[in-house]
Image (cartoon, rainbow, N blue to C red; front, side):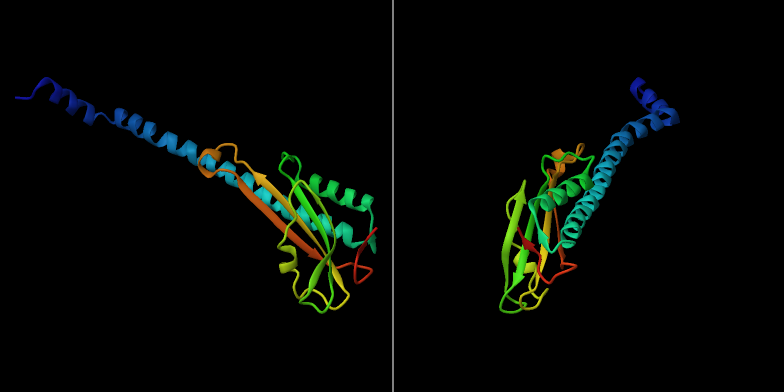
Length: 178
């Protein structure tokens, strides 16, 4: 003889509407978490592309000159900042370096540097090895940004992004600083 609770259990297990509601209740939080994670990843990928564009844009603007002035630097920094907008610019940083090769392509040295919102990037000289000949030079522009995902920052934390662009001068073998 079946007890009362066993009868209710059989009725509940046989009811498909109850199982569909239970499945929905179990799957919905997982789907919402995946949606927010995808939004965070998408924003991060777009922002990384903007950081890359900012470094290339600033370096290209500076490579047009034979001698870089304070006004040229300010314009390049402003253009890089605009390339990252509409994202928050509080964690935006840029390091602009004029590198000259003395003693061959394997001996780069920093001739001039302007840094805003970040520390100097010491990897610039390592990355510029072999990019020029004696008495030539390049400009290296590093753009950095710290991205805080709005939804998944509790799990992923802040994501540091950094892009470096190396360019040669268009009109001269070395771009000086005034």
